[in-house]
Amino acid sequence: MKMIKIDQMRRSVSLVTLSMLLMILISGCANSTVAQDLTVNVATAGEDSIQTELQLTGVLLPKDLVNISSKASGQILNMPKQVGEKVAKGEVLIELDTKTLEAQLQQAEAGLSAAKAAYASAQNQAALLKISLDQTEKTYLDTKALFETGAVSEGTYTDTTSRYNLAKKQYENAAGPLQNQALAAIENAEASIHTLSVQKENSTIISPIDGVIVSGDIQSGEIVSPGMLLLSIADLSTLKMKGTIAQAYLPYVTVNDKVDFKVDIYPDQIYDAEISKIGPMAVSTGKIFPIEITIPNEDQLMAGLSARFEIEVKGKPHVMIPLNAVVNAEGQSYVYVIKDQVAIKREVVTGLKNDTSVEILSGLEKGEVIAITNTHILQDQMLVKIATE
Image (cartoon, rainbow, N blue to C red; front, side, top):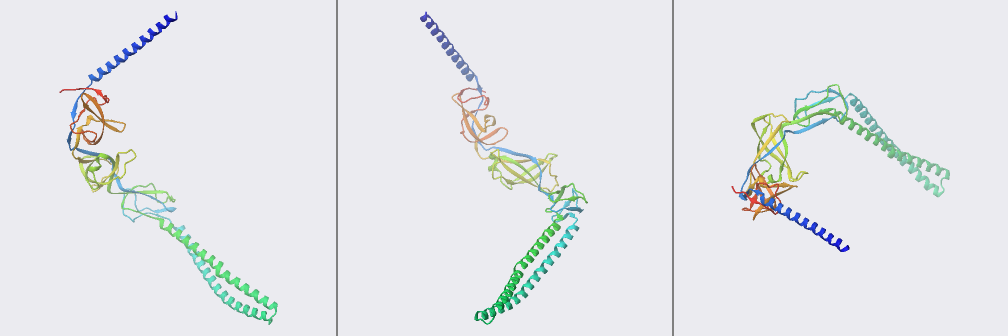
């Protein structure tokens, strides 16, 4: 019985193994058939210089935009300029009430005069006490000499010593602490005058730039406080637009290059501009760099308008292939080189491109054959058929 069971188990295992082998063979044949049936169109990598157009879109911004905040507190007495009006650098924008500050300033100036008078009095007192001290010191020294010879009594010597010590203490007090207190009072008064003078100066708010008042929600009679936003002034004599360009374009654009731009609401008008800045470091996403375009605003365009810039770029001779031959995945670019009816996946570095072609900077040689159709379903080492046209 045991032998029969063992034979049955062996036959079962053999059948399972045979079934698995048949499935693998069938699957392999099926895959081979799919691979053999996949047809691709191909192109031969050539060499040429590409001509393309770099386009940037964005919003026109003022050359400078300055937010004016109050540095002092007080009531607005005068606002000679309103939103929408032009202002010149140094022109008065807002005047605050300074009556309270002027009264405080007068009080501080009076305190300074009193402190200076106290200091002068302390100096005079110290001078008089110095004269008295010198006289008392001479008497003390003479008395001390006589006492040591026995010519005067101990009581006389003690009394003279006490008068000398008192005169010395009075002089040191007048020459030291009293004058120091007077000097400190002078310094405090001068600091108060300086602070109040700055506050009074800040009560007249002037424009730091030439421009136009573009915003402000305040009125005469309103109370303002330090740090409160009052007005915004924009310099619209020059406009700018910021954008980014891919690293492939960096060799072909430089600062001061002339460019054309169009404003969306004036599609038939072409304006002149130039590249004013190219960022020295890529932005956080990598492989793209900041760029800034500057526009002389002779046509009085408004900030905030949407615009488009076009920069003509002509590349240098490089390996050139059709754009649809490149597959982009996970930040890398690939092509499939066809050799002996086998698709070989090849990583490449791309350069400039236009609507139909792309430069290959490395990874592909002139004359190599590449797939230009079905590239997104191709796999490395897959067998293919080349379409005949």
